Length: 455
Image 1 (tube, helix red, strand yellow):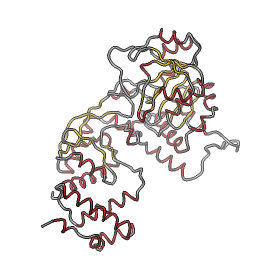
Image 2: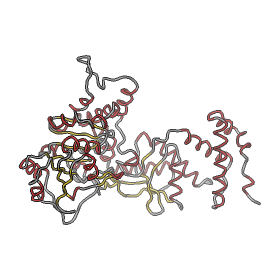
Image 3: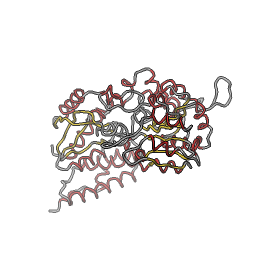
């Protein structure tokens, strides 16, 4: 007998209590189409050897399909990958204070460009500037919408149609095809490459600066390591040469570290403060990497240079909006108050000990009644501290078809994103937010039931 004949019809499913409820919640046309598509998918799965689900399971799948169709395409997900600053998952999750600031300042009007003292038009560029200058020691600061825009704006304002000297060791490409040489070209600056792919010397800079130039650009390799037979001058040495030839020194730092990462057992990541103290005239960095805030490009440096950049025509095109400035301000305050570990999610994750991850993974194992607790590594990710690994414990679940299991997890609400090692799926407690744990465990139980409906 062909078991497919046992599949209920669309009409029969519509007449069930779940079907009637779905019609009430989502409308008859949406419900009919979702059931029809679900039944077709089940027929195809049956041909591959999958068992036929029960009526209630068919309707649950159809209702889940409707929910996905009607929800926003941008949704909250649970990151169980162990990659802390996950570019594909939105990089840094915001501190609660940053989220609250966005809500508070977005549902009504603000003084974004209004001076409350004079009652006249003000400037948005002043918001967050005082916090940034206090934190970094810079004379002035400007916030734009991302670090690529920050670099483009600085080069356009300070080096258009003039030469910019950069080492071949720093002609980097980051995610999404962003290449330093391409940005320099778009700014109108003239790229002067020096050195080789693994070594550059001060003499290379001096020789290049014998001809008129606007600046030296130093690009920090925040997303890969250069190892082996390598050599590069320090920021302090570059500053000395820049002063010798009366040119600017700009440091595209990217990752935006404001604290000493060695206190967490990590490799030392150069900080913004160190770059300025060593003699950089301008430093650019991201708001959503090691700062742990919203997507933003932050420019700090000398007052007269920041003033030129602020008044450049491109500054308006790449300016930050009120939600970005609100979230960034809230994030910066945690660094000023030395409360970043307690409040900024990425630093909570980085500071979490291996023993703490083991305790959480064991709790998950006990709650689910299965799986193994295994020792492995988390990574920083997001173009920050490349190659650095943090010891951690994961919950490991062995399944015959791990890719299928990951797909089921992605189709949960909220979706769960994990990783595969061999034929096992790993879940890292380090990157699952505390207030997501209940939803994570519920979603994992549902996924296991979908994978093994008879258990």
